[in-house]
Image (cartoon, rainbow, N blue to C red):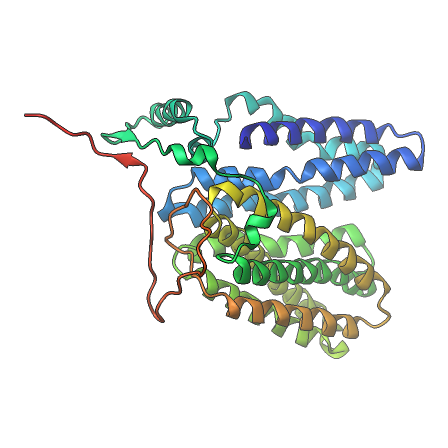
Length: 384
């Protein structure tokens, strides 16, 4: 279930982080941080849980708010690193960095399970209790009717990665995975190489990293304003266009030498690529059904780790910053092509629960958006 995985991930992360802070050798530190990386993967399930609790008309904004904590976490880590490396040491940094997760772990007992997940596993009575609990907690009431108990879900398979690539989803899945890999590469590439620009110009790595991370804060507010107004594909297209433009301008050393202008460009670049990153995960949650939603997002999160490693090496090892910006701009252009290649618009779509093994994905006529919201509430037959 979603709830149990989130709980295991949070508690495991806390324990592994604490143990890593007391590492007695490099091998022990490497092993414990490897475990931390595994437990961090539970964040993909937390995002899935948030998506399945969000109403269709407000899902975009709610998920942007959830992903905003990625930005605030990066800012917290930068400030904490600045403090610990100057006044304390790395052991304190590892312990203090886990404080937010320790805080979240305290409230895990009150975290409800996803009603969508409960429906797909045939736990109809528990689903009813969860919905009633949510209604009571929000001083509301459930609509008249009863949950439709579709017993066919008991025979369906869940969590199979191969179902992400069945014929119905195959072409879109390939495009989405390529787009996510390239956009993650672009995001971390600009983050790492942006630090090199600041260090060359000014020299305080932690201070300039805090400034660079602040560039992602506007992405949260822009996302809250436009995410449920513009189609998902339009948002992605605009973000990648602006990102490529930023990379093109940063190719020129004369422009990078202007400190304020370089700072603004890095701000804009991190803002738009962060918004693209948020929008892609929202698209993932809306496109795939409940039976494979967490699997699809988890698979994407696993693959993007490769992009992070590659972007780090390239940003640190490339001899010329301008050449690095050309590479990151070209990779961003690949992500732009992928966003144009998406055939399905997910804005306003309800969340489907079961895998559709149909032969073809139904395309939408140009200029229209078809919304299909599955109904799980059946009206009560009244007798007079």
